[in-house]
Length: 292
Length: 302
View 1 (cartoon, chains in turn cyan, orange):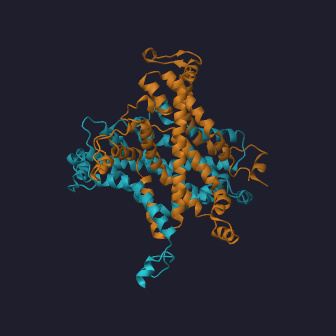
View 2: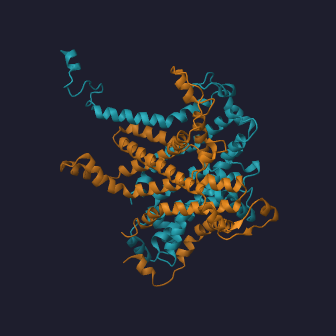
View 3: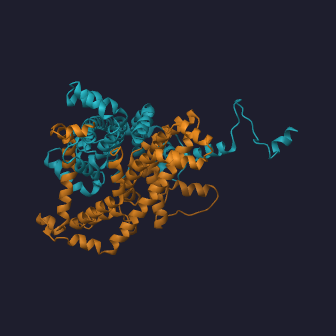
């Protein structure tokens, strides 16, 4: 009888749950399988890359295998030993942190003005800001470089940090969120005698936290991975950030592929940690910003 | 009474003070270079002019030359098509994954988010290098996997045919964009009140009706933002094509960004390159004009 039941096509399910909960439906299983399949496609390149960081140079140059034939940490130790990795790492962290703070401060100020004040030229300036998102960096590289050079910012931390503050996307995202803060709140604070700056710093900023989180995440990611810009400004090895160091290695006559892979993997780890810890804020921030 | 009404009566210095730092940075870093670019686009500026240190004014010649060149239109059309395909695939797959994620168990969901985040956190250059490696001529893991499955295929140049080449490059772009799109749509979906959907289902609405009448309208703003940002980013794709094709892309792989760059730095026709860049920005503005208007409007009229 039991056997018959298993092959009974009319039975709703051909399986039972081992956990004692309700048995999953066919559609549910298909959905899960589909999602896992898609996720694997997304993830596969990353896994393969990470595995490759344990392979020797000879193996990397030969026929590709998914798993390392001989597992070794040599690439990592060599990257740490023979290159000024600590310096690059410090530069990346320093530039990313300061640039992100600067971006948040000036972008939120501008966003507040665009969202909550009515002033001559507001719409024009805002559209202009938005239009700036569309300028491809590589076509204006030379003039940008000239500006930075004229300001004496080549081979300085300021040169790496200041241009990052010109992030029109940040102004836009924060402004959209601030539109949802009720005007009455600001009005009543004003009636209570709060100064304009106090209203911005004490009332508007805390309320805009989700949008600030989103911009912070984007900014950290962009600055950490920025490549074209630092390549221009950081000509002295002292100011190399991780991507610049990687690009320089890539440009050598004999490309040390194994070192590049190991350094790349190491450069992802800090951002990854930040993301995993901030996962909840990321999802919350995006959902609250996007929906309003 | 709105703030707007109160503020209109006297001119306050506050808004100007608040926007000053951002606007200054924008003008310095983007505005001034654009003016330079515009200026350059009205000049003949080649190697001779570089040596002389000054260009020769030619009026609109660079623009009319480009616009009457059939190459320009082919490349523009190709760029539009490329952008459209990538954005379409990214949004559809992203939305599908977000909807699937919503139905998953919590543990799986957190795991998935972590994976997406991992791809998201990957530097663009590293991501491109990985993909390039996946499809390289000699060491392609794809080719060797197929071979180890028992099909004796030879080393294959995936970029010989531009359709397959653009598919791979586009796949890489979409892959990089997918985490952000999926997480954004997922995040937005969690904000749709469950009661609303349940009520609709009780009233006999089909799943499609629920999606069309409840979920989609609520998610409309986020779709607008995602689509417009994707269009802007994908239209400007440069590094992907550049890196995939060893910094020497064949003319049939030119998109607007590559074309402008190649005219300037390859042909040393900086004036013409500048004109093409300007035309490219105009083409993008025309394409995103509607979305831009929506973006300014969102929340504005409410």
